Length: 382
Image (cartoon, rainbow, N blue to C red):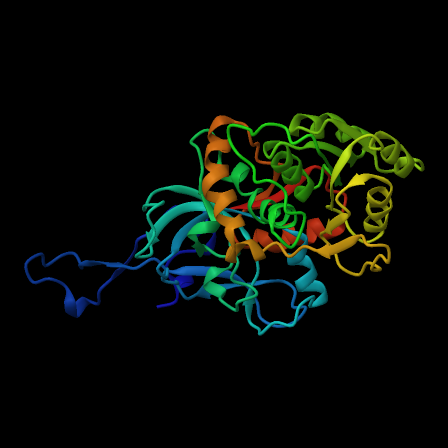
């Protein structure tokens, strides 16, 4: 029986774990009751926002296989999803060569339903946030825009009771992206973050685009790792980036911003730069790093930059690479749970809820693609 013939998708998206009941035919009615048919409990059924072919619009809301977690994985029932630039890029521009049909989405938060044989950190019923990394592996059951998602346990973190699903879901992909660029050995290779906070390193990290989703996470990770942070933002977001821990914000729109930052860092030792905007801003970060003492490395969220020729390294961050190395565990297991619990790490930026139900995913992606979203992250509730 098709799921939508029993329960509307809008209802499925609002409830937690759903047990679906269907009536047996009259011929199977119990002789002992004589009046009422038996009720038979069925397994939960999954639904997803499918992208059936390249550049298909809108997403198709239909059933999806319910995955079973492998040894180091967990299955969660999603209660909130968040939108990222990559979702719109893939839908509108077929940004990556992929095998369709596919499910997009990487930011999820929800309740653990089942766990793999080797999972010890989580149990059914736990509230968690997680980075769903199934897209590039071709595992639709491990992608985000659906009712149930499989997560690697090293990319998931328990959510404290004082943090809602919609607040928590803004974190995963952008946290992973910032962490990949900052801590991996082939990138900036900074000291790892700790809670309580580690002693100062005496070094300064330039975070270009501190009010962006990646920048909001980069600032907090850097401060927790013992680095001073200099960042850029619009003046209206100066107080916001200061709350996250930035020592000195600069107006990214100022015609003298490069000179201003170079002057502010001339007596500091830079730990490098992370460019959370990309393209033209990468060259600006290279210019600042070139003039400063310290590490000559710029990690950037976008490719397409001209390679520097004077010994400065520039490297494009892929936010999923930490799933296969020490950084995933260090951030999601050893740092984030304590930091969220203590309040040292704030889920940022703030969520902007578009609506409830998988049918709202397309609306949220379209809204992001129109632009104008500042220091917010678009969220859909389920």
